[in-house]
Amino acid sequence: MGRLFCVIPCYNEQEVLPETSKRLKEKFESLIAAGKIDADSRILLVNDGSKDNTFSMIKKLHEENPLFQGINLSKNMGHQNALLAGLMTAKDLCDMAISMDADLQDDINAIDAMVDKFNDGADIVYGVRSKRATDTFFKKYTAEGFYKLINSMGAHTVYNHADYRLMSRRALMALAEFGEVNLFLRGIVPMIGLNQDVVYYERAERFAGESKYPLKKMLSFAVEGITSLSTKPIKMITSLAMFILIATVLVFIYSLVRYFTGQTNPGWTTIVLSVWFIGGLTMLSIGIIGEYIGKIYLETKNRPRFIIESYIGDEEDMEVSEYSYKR
Ligand code: UDP
Ligand code: MG
Image (cartoon, rainbow, N blue to C red; front, side, top):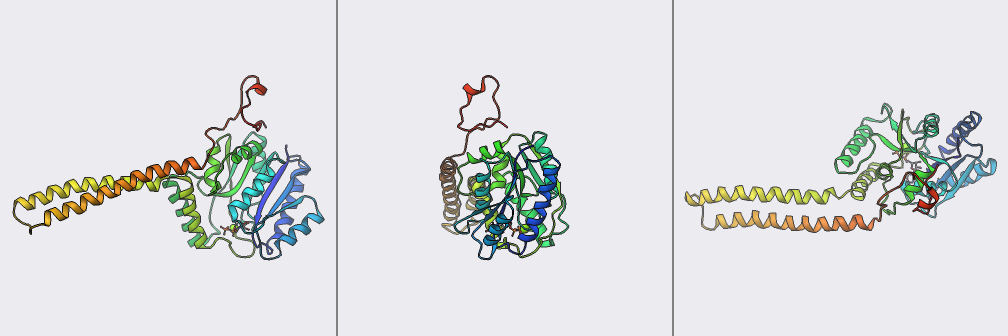
């Protein structure tokens, strides 16, 4: 049992909001009736600078039923930031928060299982797509390629999990300790630790309206994911430099052989060797500078160096954080 907040970022979602709010309301009522969540649970709609009627619809929903609450961002801040605004508002008010999209692609019926897992002690429950039957061929492969790419680049995310997840209050408290401006929630949440679990669901088609993530935004999201979580691309420069320096040795041997067998024009050996050697050296230097920039980059993120799950002993005396992570 606990107070549930469902956080939904909304950007130009007037076509789907009536249906989403109706279905969520029914879901909340049944969960409350079943005694799984508190009666004062809330649906928190974050208006991310929509240009249509989304905001006035949220206001009207709230007037009709206090179950619905709203946050209005000053302008379009993007999905991840809208989500964070909602989660950080919820963290002081709820026992658990579920984030989901407005377009009903995330199966609402998975909420039951998420809440059950929370009641069994989970802090983070990921909604993972079991199939992509409804996605177009193109979306399926671009999306799966996306997960593979960012994982191979050192950003560890949960495969086939978007931003449909439950987080306990203490997981939200821990999330609040990450001071990142470049926000890629899917990569950060696994870093929190605590008790993590998974719920499978089938991804539906967007109920109405158009995707707010065209290919261009998706690509920049992938780049954001990689560059905001890992410094692996920088490290690749160093590896490449090593490779070229090794190749230089081979070129060196090859050139000498040609030189001594008289198979060259005057000057050829010097030029070929200089090109490879100077090239490798330049790249190595860039790589070394990059390693330091990578360190500076991670330092400026000001990430928490540890997150304490619990204390054994006289807790009151031991609490080092201003927050209580107790559940
Ligand atoms: N969204 C947002 N701000 C944006 C873009 C999207 O708040 O700038 C919201 C959008 O309203 C939806 C969610 O993010 O609730 C996911 O967007 P969408 O369904 O269009 O993405 P897709 O499912 O196509 O990847
Ligand atoms: Mg969608």
